[in-house]
Image (cartoon, rainbow, N blue to C red):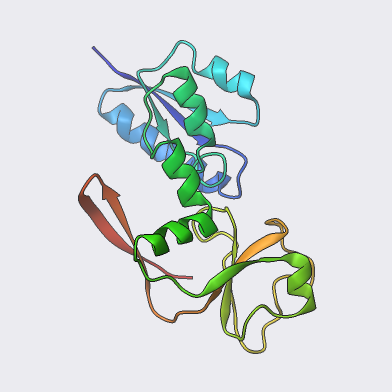
Length: 197
């Protein structure tokens, strides 16, 4: 029996274009393996999503990136509907996407973390939160969206009021070195990728 897979992609986060590309590639790969594939460009419309998932697929492949796709929101909808899906569950997704909370959990588990704290825009405009160089990160964006390294001579990201990621940011001490990400499934590392900005 052919399995039906609904591929959710697009969305309205800052990573929409990457998600559309990911979703199209996933759909091609699944189709080449004889799965029945339905592509859904997710909009900010719960009724539309519910209609798109009817008839109910055997599984959802979550190719949504960033907010609402990786932060537990879509996972919560799929849990309520009882549809199996790829990705971490609701709580793991929500905790991982919230950088300050994830950092607190890492520290509690004994992992070393860069010195840092959450700073409100108003506080940032009055004085720099720490000596340069430091890193400014949105609280809950995916990937490296909005991550800014502030070095000597740079304008702070709030100086021109062009920061589109909310009133609070995570500010951390800059740690020089290479950034490596490792995908893990269960207890198996799937590979390492260097991230370059």
